Length: 102
Image (tube, rainbow, N blue to C red):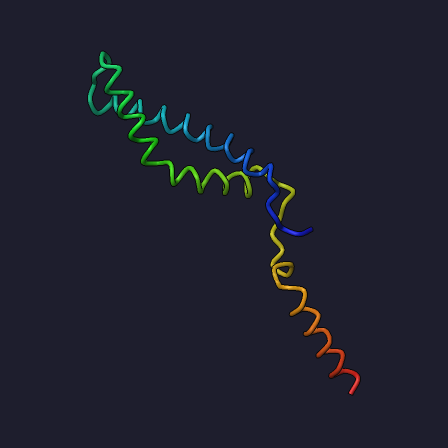
C-alpha cells in the first residue's frame, strides 16, 4: 500500500479540528470562569474564547491531521521502504544482480 493522503482526508481533518475547537472552547470558558469568577458578562467569555481559539488555530491545523492519520485511521501504517524512489531501488537491484553474476 502506498502511503499517500487522499483528498477526503482533509475534509475529515476539518471535522477533527472542529471537535478540538469545541473541546478547547469549553476549557477556555471554564478557565475564564475560574480566573475571573465573573458569570455575568457574555463579552468576556466571547472575547476570551475567540482570542484563545485564534491563538490555538496553528496547533489545531497540525494536530487535527496528526490525530486523524495516526489514531483515527487504524488500518493505515507507515512503511519506510515504500518511501524510496523506484529508480534507486531498481538500480540497487541491478547492481546486486550484476555482482552475483560475475
